[in-house]
Picture: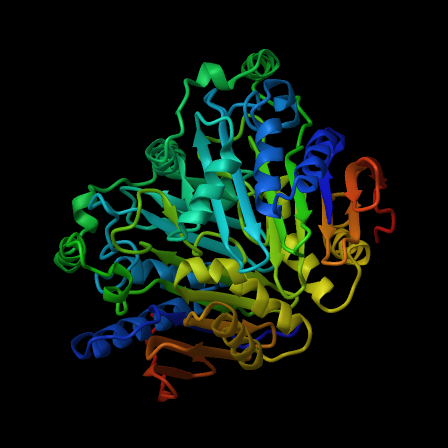
Length: 313
Length: 293
């Protein structure tokens, strides 16, 4: 059996980042990609790789996922996440879940322990409790930055969406040595939204999609627009028809702009290990690790490279 | 002008659409009104829709519903919504507000209340049949119900606008908070203005959603396939992928801007249809796909 070169691509959310956050977000995304890659060196699967990378970024307060997530209109953290196995198309998702630090891990348990795909709201919390999944005080997930953003958005003339241009969803796609692909996406949603608002992230085909027959995708951007295009499934559809990840990503992002005047970012991998990170916003911190190298960038057109040192112990 | 609905019980809805369109109403209004009548009727709850539908594992009726317009691509959905007998109408209000696409659980209920809907006691959402089935489930700790129905309706109006709506009370005795395929764009429903087409899926939601079949049917129609061929192709694809042993229940309907209809399924799947020129809506049948590798 041919053993593939494993690949992982990770993103930290598309938007326009303030100068003071660019380098730290890029560094953290790069670290998450490297750690996700280490999982396959330890015998992990594509699912393990994307779960690892997503969990690291959920635990990092710089990103709109897990700790550091934006707050809904009541000042609360509600989290969405999805994880999908390209081999079986099995999927797990949680939507509007509270008091959970790592919704990607919980989504994986939904996939593995129930016959359902998505659990939401109190049902998701009830499931977590039944499994003994750790619950955390909501306060532990709220950062001063998120709280300040929430406070500013309470002003009558505020524009919550515009003010959130630098604080996005996180995600990962991976190919393991067995040739399986997987994706994961995780978010705190949009700041100051209605309680119970769900965006694209936990919706299969919108926030992410993975199929061994073609590849895997994770998306970031304005959820309402991404959902109407089922952006992740659209990209996989184009790959099914022979497009490369880059062509499929470009074509789909162009469709999104033409149809809905919306910008977004995507990371895409195909089942042969070809990958891309594309975005039509100013920035998206991303990193890819494969064949002894790490590639990363945050500005349009930027690709930095370095060799991987022996970081997987 | 045309309309198509899932399962035999949609006949009343498609007939209502015919009369509403004769009075000059547009696609979205027709979908909402026709579906509300069926959703709110406890008697049709046994078809896993709205009031009278099957409760979740904790005995609470939680509904999923969504509506999508081909032009200009507006979408609204509610999921795990308790206490409202016309969830599709709430989804329509979400769509009209156009700030968000989807609201879930208690947030959805809070929004509905704010918009003037009553959040009713769960007892008023349950039917006797639903209660009996739930008690049987509690005794046996497993569902003997094979119901995976769901109401899907696609309407093409006199202006060439296409709207699709889907409503369900979800898998009987599901885990609380479970969201199935119905309210997810690309899964339970999809509409696109360029294909001017839509598709509604019904059956085992947890299995269906992994294929995003409604999106797939619409993409194939965009590439020139008829609604019938597009549905057939997607079902064939799924059967081939899953294999005979693991095949699950799925039925698809589709409609294009010419008013041509299509349906395909892995089970015997009646659907109802009306197009301009027909005196009344009629029931048709999709037979289970047989060429499984």
